[in-house]
Image (cartoon, rainbow, N blue to C red; front, side, top):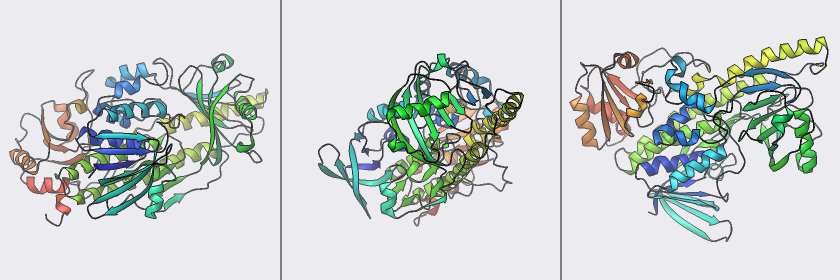
Length: 553
């Protein structure tokens, strides 16, 4: 074998997977046909759960330092046009404020990290840099995968160098593909996407025109406070625009109206589209341009076949409301990474990998549905005639629109339930409990240690999170002064080669959070089991390691 895992696609899924594997001593070769990481901004919102994963890998602070200046407000603001009337504003903290406030937050937002507004192009650079430093990880941009063959003992992956046309074939134990919405690998496997597509809305439904542009005078032209996300609401030019660097670079997206053809537009005409959204003339420079289609809420019918696995946009497509696509891809990689490593190292049987699709596909359906609802809320709300008029009726319409859009902003961007609430109930590797499932609401997250969900979080002081004390692999929490030793569980983990950190915590608040003296936490910080004693240690570890579903179990 040339490597343990071949990775197709060097976006967030592929790069995060390379980091997860490399940290565990699993070799990987990554191919991506682009010459380097993304140039265009693409996704612009990193959720708190994703930042917790970056913290676990040790580079959350490096990510938080990227993008906009640390004091730049990350507000979501709604305008008729960017320089005419502000309709509503949902205020959010700057990067500096987020870092200083996180330890004081509780309830739904008790977390090791707050969200961060940073372009995917910057995040990918960090992920790539860290992946390339890992022994056994080899990253090859400028290489396109043109074929693969799955067999009983491995996958042969054929790749072609874009510049020279030379080809090479590598042999790997497994292959994972995050090769985008038009995934070559998914199409070769014959898997279709199901769900909602081709939806037409007044906004966020149909052909979208994207401009990555530089306009340093934008902040002088607009009389309003800067914001991270800027949304226009008028009958002529609806758009959203994310600040990329806080100094004049923007990712501008507008819906093409009937009769508009982006391919036929000159750069000057394209800039007039941008100026129409601003509402006054400004000088700007186009850095790149393109089109995409909004109105998708699609999930692939399968996430795996044999030794081949799919993740990211290859298996779920979002209209980018709520910023869920890239963050869902990161969670895919984290879930798959520890499982592939366990199987490659012989800790778990190959049947463990069946749980990847079982766990992640329902979450993809859940998240695309949440994004669809956000898109409907904004896209189906239409501007009324007279909204921009300088009249009493125009002022009344702007107040009305502002109330609606302000409520929408809170609903779309204050989403701890979406961020932390995904669960793996019913997974064969979760020691599930009989429980009444809580309502899955986007804006409410109720922390629970019931197996199948994110481990409840706790701050010990202003700098020490409970998550900082977890092991990189498995963690056994022994909570309270009277917690059982769990010697049987510890011995069984050692016998099976399962790396286990035993963490003793006396803090009564943590014991209240977890509601059991013994708790087993997976490498992805998901609670796998909890109980009062370890009398069934063998059965517990057979279940959570995937051995219970193995023919040899």
